[in-house]
Structures are given as C-alpha cells and as structure tokens.
Length: 220
Image (cartoon, rainbow, N blue to C red):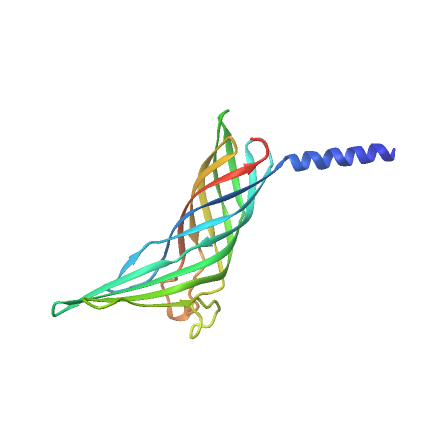
C-alpha cells in the first residue's frame, strides 16, 4: 500500500514538472516617458536593454501562464538647442532607470508543427534598483560639458528623482522554433513615476517597446 502511494505521488510530481518550462531571454528596449509641456525642447527615445529568466506553466495545449524575473532599462531623453549671435548651445538630459520586474502573462499558443506562434498579455510589477541621469551641454567651439548622477528613488518630491515602484501592462507576440524564442512586446506603464505628483498633473508613465531573443529548455 505504501509503495503504491509513493508511486502515485512520484507520477503526479513528474506530470506536474512536465507542464513547466524554463527559459532565458535578452534584448533591446526602446523606451520613453510621457511628459507634460516641455516647451521648445524635443523628447527622444532612450535605448536600453532587458534580460532575465522565464517560467511557463501549461494549463492546456493552447493556454499557459508565463512569469519570470528580469532586469529592464527604461527612461527618456530631452534635447534643447538655442542660437544667439552665431553661437549655438545644445542641452541634452537623459533619464535611464533600471528596474527589476516580474511579469505575469496569460499566453495563447498556436502549434504550427515546426513552430509555435503565441500572443500574450498581463500585468508587470517593477522595483527601481538603479540607473543614471546624464546632462550634456555643447557650445559652439567649446568642449562638451558632462555630468552624471545616480537616480535617487523615493516619494519625496523635493529630494528624490523617481518613485521606487512601477506597475503596468504588457502585450505582445512571438514565435518559438526549436526552442529558440523570438518576440516583441509593448509595456504600458500605469503608475505615475514622478515623486512630485501634486505638482505634476500630466503623470509621468513608462512606455517601452521590447524586442528579444531567448531559449526555452525542455521539449518543444
């Protein structure tokens, strides 16, 4: 009797593990932040990176839940140029925070035989763990002046640069061919990341396009 119970338990554990796949992925982030009125300045997309691990649990042949843990760089750039008397001055400021994120996606898989197409959507939760703010001033005929400082996370609008937490939604699609994963996604930030919310009616929110390649361990 005891041996039968042990056999049943081992069988159920093996079947459960067979429904779980693990993977890794990395890629490019094309990021921006929704800002209010910045006058004559120009906002520029910030390029960064993401990488991390994937855990996928199959519920049926077509549906699965995907989560994991990843580092994700976000941010934006602002450029402003002024001319006076034949001289020009260009000021560039960049915001490049780094987040530790946990996405939780509902995923629909379509098996095409030699490949699997999928679409997914779900929330993500992020915590700011680092990043830099950079300032550059370029004047006609003079060396460029540069300054770099660490981003300070917190909720004090007088001393902090960004709120620590970020929350939003991911939506995307991809293809898996012989365990090689290629995908694209869009991250829609729902959290106002500015610590000075009372004076910022426009709400600064992260926007990120991610393009990645990865590898899924286990059977396809």
